[in-house]
Length: 145
Image (cartoon, rainbow, N blue to C red; front, side, top):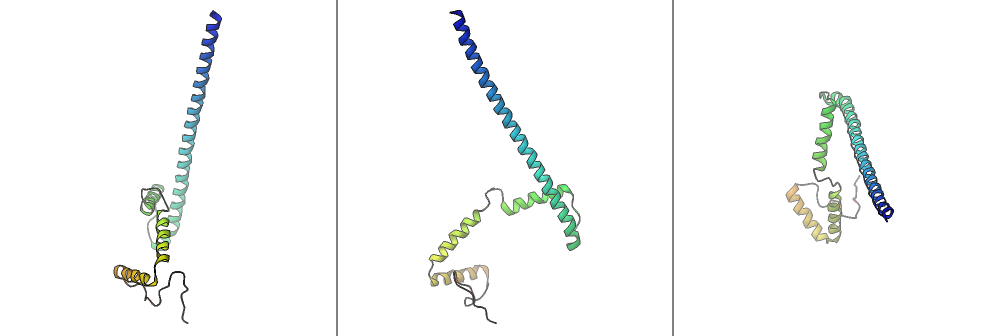
């Protein structure tokens, strides 16, 4: 009877120990993955920063007479361009949906509605070509020689 109790306790202890070791290994693997991600991210930023710095220092002084920049200024330039070009939302490609939706609406418009839309855009955005020379959706533009 006593050996049966010890066998159950021993089996229970072994099972708990195996679970603990498996959990410990999983946590260790997670830490290793996070460290790899951080190191690869830092390597990526470093390489791209040096590329931007070298390109800037090669082109900008020769073309425009601007000053040379250092590595941290190049990284700051990268961050600034990320903020200005894609914003904080982190979802690139949102404008593609808008463009596709606008093209679908354009295709469903009658020629009169399209001309009315063009007139409205001319009123807001200024003149960008005459209506006779403006390309129609799905049509070819005639070129006079």
